[in-house]
Image (tube, rainbow, N blue to C red):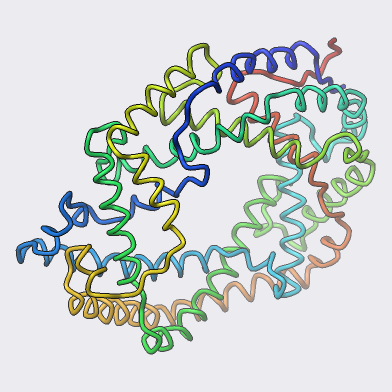
Length: 432
């Protein structure tokens, strides 16, 4: 049987008993916090306390700045390409029939894996329906427990968590310690440099057109390959079947049929638990964990509010709060490539233009060089997908229902509670 015990639920509520008292701090952070982690990609050369001096840097500094902008442009192109490669083509509206079939089987496998980890329920086992029905009998109490958590605290924790999320990366990548006396000046300089480099990274329309055909072709082929590899990995992890070695997909079909039969017998949880409640609790746990890990402040421990006040005092005095407020206000402003923008990065506008052209040429050459590789990859992927389709993948996918969202979210939440607090909410023996 599967039991959601009362005592662990009380332990969870007890963990949060100090949080509301700790929220009595004077937060001067902007309600809409800027993405501090995005500054971590700014080259250190741009971080000059005196931006006027940076614009008049010596020849060595200018050479380094040119290199930095060129790297930034190349990185921008690479990041865009990487994003395309990692796009899950199987989930897009225009995905092909084979990709959709593969994605549906993979989604079911991921559902099974989540319930195995978070609930200790093997959805391919004959005992799975009974275990899920046992769980349903105790779900109302769990829903009450989760709703009793101080979810309203997120309004104050969110900006603090955003600060925490960026603090570590700023220190690691740029050496900016938010508690240091010069943090405000450095944040302002990094923000200006980011705007300048973002403007400089815009490749002109002609260069973009020159690389678009090959880059898009490469992205399309590689996205399909990535989707296939990802789906096969999910199926192996969830269903325990190596599709590449499954002749005729017999083992895949058998595992999928057992899963489909048990999924059809699952009770609906939607009248007891809502996705919005589960998402809010997960967000609360994440905020508390991030603040603890990155700022060293345990918001669940007595006295945390005083520690936050101390941090706010430091951030006010060193100008960091003011810099973040300006970033929040100006974050949506679009900067064009201009002499002043380039100067803020310590780079003449003419050098920025040359860096643009060089980066465009580099990306163009890389796309052409990969054409033959992508052709071979495309043929390989097409052959594998064609083999799976002929072996009956569409029929297997058609027999699988869409995985319900709430049980999967609940499984992820229960696993997070266990990892974060060491509280196991579930038992496989009768409990109170």
